[in-house]
Amino acid sequence: MRASERSKRATTRSGVGVPARGRAGGPRGEAPGLSEMRDDFAVRLKRALGDDRVARDAPLAPFTTFKLGGTADWLVLAHRADDVRRALEIARDAGVPVTLLGGGSNVLVSDRGVRGVVIRVHGGDVRQLGVDRIRADAGVTINGLVRWTIAHGCAGLEMWAGTPGTVGGAIFGNAHFRGRLIGELVVQAELASERGEVLSVEAVLSADFRVGRGDAAALRAVARESLAYRKRTQPLESPSAGCIFQNPDPSRDRIPDGIPASAGALVDRAGLKGAREGAARVSMTHANFIVNEGGATATDVRRLIQRCKDGVRARFGVELREEIVFLGFDDGHTAN
Image 1 (spheres, rainbow, N blue to C red):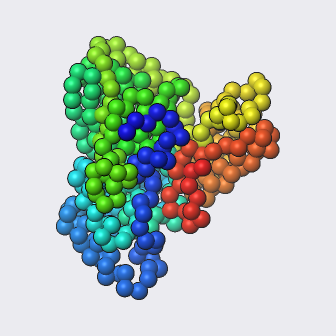
Image 2 (cartoon, rainbow, N blue to C red):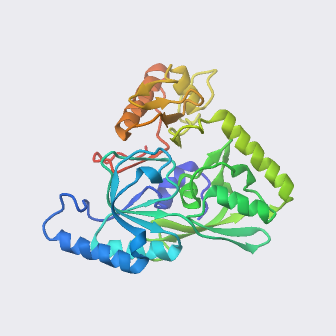
Image 3 (cartoon, rainbow, N blue to C red):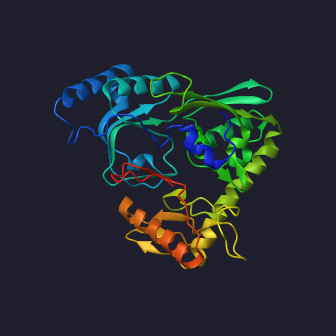
């Protein structure tokens, strides 16, 4: 799979933040007769992965960069592709809905949490397949991948230093930075289906990246410059999900003359920089970021997102589309 456009993220269904198919519901308010089956599901998970990697009613806020949101009915900590396969198979057999979570950036978890099982994919390895290709497991952080490539003199990923989240999440969202898409470097990705088969479309297990040869010192200098740029232009001091909105498409959206094709610029010029709902605030550093100033709720964030969309539409006639993914909302809201 090669991800070359942000619009392709819905078709890759990498699973980072995307619920797999399954029966709705969970331990709370479930239909009669499901309780015993789901108890057996938990037993099977613990037997396959270990008691210390399966938790009931687990808070999700610590696993997101927004540091907010409710609990998961079950939380599974998966470190390797085999862990993901086994958890998917067990959940499918039990009819339990699945949501996969990587580094927790680019998502907003409902205050009510997420029903079913959340599989957090974190950890793994990076391997060199040849002089021009490396393979990284989905749970490897982008920063960890960058460090590995620099240490091994592999050029191409150094500019992605400072990118939050994991390889799986970056591929799902086709992460972007300064006009570049990470999908431009992806040669192929290994996927797992909901049934655990390694061929379909529910979860990214690993990805191969195209690299070249480079001097470690020069690569490190590029990485430092990228980190410095992020520090100057992004509110790194406060919890956030990253960019809230996709940048508008000049070929589709009628952007007024003199305004860049930037969601942050539109929010700013609509007079919403610094706008607040509860403890959620549009960042004064970058208006495409909403920050948690301490104790913000997902409800606060959603209200602020809607204010920004309404304000930009009223002022400029441009419809902003969310970049973040919404998890656990009863109205079925997902990123537009």
